[in-house]
Image (tube, rainbow, N blue to C red; front, side, top):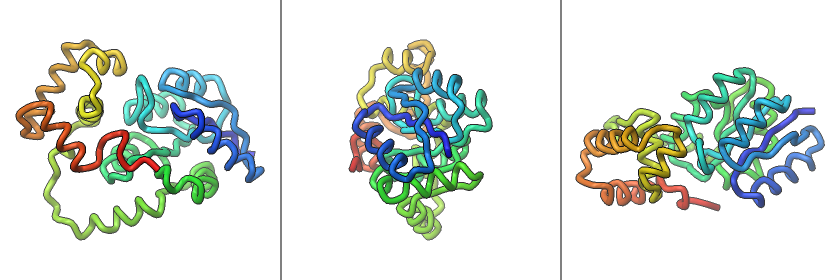
Length: 215
């Protein structure tokens, strides 16, 4: 029996994931988190083999959360389940310590196989993402502006583009507003953007916002 923790800020999504796993009979859901804080508490308290983790929850989330969880619970396997089918998200997630990357549009068909593969020490990439990786091999090697950002800069960029204020970002990332403002300046410089509105337009064009590509 593979013990699993589900982390997603939408109760309906968690219910659907739980049903898929429980119907397969080989899994036991031992906890459900709705944000970064509750997810951290669960992985510290529950004996689980796999964490199915949404990249975009309230509070601490994304690559930062993956890194912290792997620092504290290195044996826990993390399967990212996200609406983001953009390759850059997957690359950063794997570098942070994730063992699998599954898009929500593929979850109903691939979740059981993905959790099983990750739990047994393997690495899983959804078929849709694997196709994107393969296609990228034929693309020009030029680095896109958002790919120049560090993981923390990318997280701040993503939150700015989603309309979060400096104060909200500071609270979510547990840093000062001054630090976030410094990141913002650095992001604009690295991406060669004149202002925050340009960041939003860029994120829309490259489908980097949380409400894009949602099934």
